Image (tube, rainbow, N blue to C red; front, side):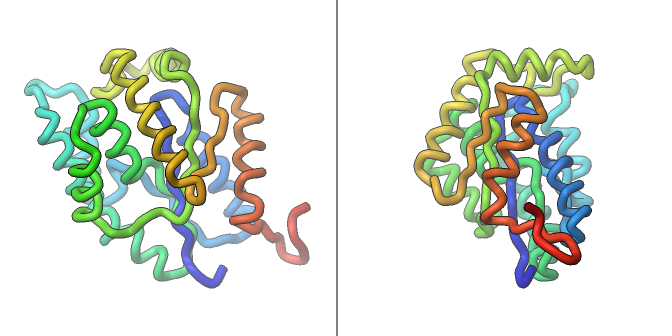
Length: 216
């Protein structure tokens, strides 16, 4: 590929986005496409610690404004340290959550004003994804899946159903406003069908070629 491509994976809890990201990474490896797999929070050396502070239940109550600013600090470091260098090297960057998560969780879930969040997102980084895959399913189904993993609840999974429905609503509103950037995948189906739907959406935007010919 002649230039880097920045692809983000978004969705509510239990949407399966992380699994689909890993499956796509396997495909890129098969077709020898240089790529980087990363995530927010936790993609940079700094944000490894930030991820623990943000997502886990700690002995103190993390204020919504503090949570928001930690996410933004994580992004500023993550973009400068990991994402931009990889894109400059012509790699495909697969990122598990990015700025749309801020709009959905801090806007829909926490109730911060969207105009404020958009300004803050731009302050943290002006880099926008080339493509965003949104894995969509009803909030109650996603929560049931997430809590069925048996790993215990993180801070986001501990929020009520109303919180997660508001998160989903903002995701879908954002996808409708930016149809050129978003591919919405039905995550309320088997992993295999969601995977096929994802690849069908990507095929014209991410040509997958093996040595000696195009996949087909």
